[in-house]
Length: 461
Image (tube, rainbow, N blue to C red; front, side):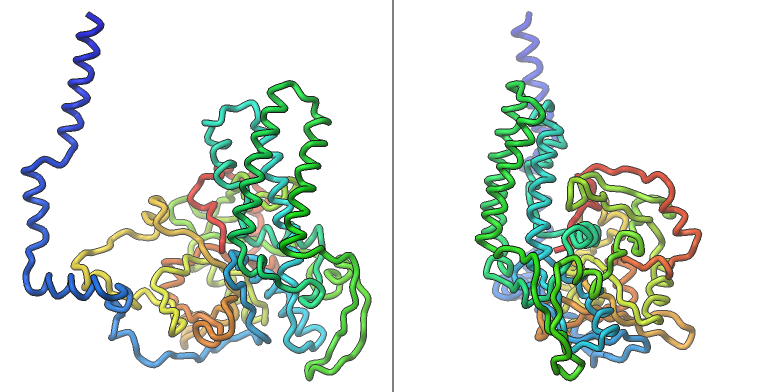
């Protein structure tokens, strides 16, 4: 009887597979979609031998690039993150350096991105190891454990990481801890440290399963972090504890030699109130607006703050952005930069590429649906430095200072149409003085907590 039941179940399973599979009759219908007409053959030849982006480049959208902006915050020098995912860090530091340049009339000036990156990687290593300790009694198939093992370390992040790392470790000028091959090309270093962290994570789980005491596990974790510290020091250098800084005037002439620690340098040239004076806004139409959200494990320190944001309509976010720019204050901005980017012109425009005409296929998902299907999310952070307003005060286009070097885009910048802003903008960090009181009050409410695997977790790179 049991054997017949098993055979019956297998038979039903096979029928189900046959019903859902591609049958010969179905295949004949599918194949008719490609007719092999002269136009089909011409397109096939063109697409098979060329970059599809160049073929889809919308010639009607190649008019002269309008580079006028009615409001623009001045800046000095374009930074370059090279082959790394540190855009979040470059962007956060660019916001602070603009203030330092204006306050002290400095020439082109840059904070060291390597210094906070070193501590970011060490803190993330601890976040992972402590996460493995916290979940040690859960099976490896648990979704949180799986997520941790898939994401032991990343060079990406958000403004929350800038606030958490800088407030704890301070800042140094670029010359006090310069770039290295590994900081500018992070993939190999990250791969090796991630591999070691996963090994450490399994060891910690095993020690806990064997009944190790809490203090013993803590001691082993500390030793493991020592190994990570050494690997980071070999790749990035040893973070300075004190240094001399030659302050120069706007013309580049030396004014004074100052002796600093990273914390004293932060106090003078940075912003010690990062955690108090800045809030993050999100435009995510897949969730309710005017609510506050928090994403689990979306932080850079175990003892730091999970990324928390208020979800708002794009037009409300634009009002705060314009108010900030009018007051000569740049902002941390993130978006899905790869969508419709003409990198040669430095233009973000929804009409840059016409894939629909080229392929004869429509792409009909809106922003909400793209988020829900993991088709779009925040991928890159830049500094919002300008806006062009029409006679009615409505934004026409926006200016972003990028961190891809001075020769990229338009003089190191990207120009973004207002329509593109609506479709692909995700996050904006604004000083609280530009935020309406009714929105600030939302940050006092208890956040809706989202899991680490939520679509909005995506880190800027």
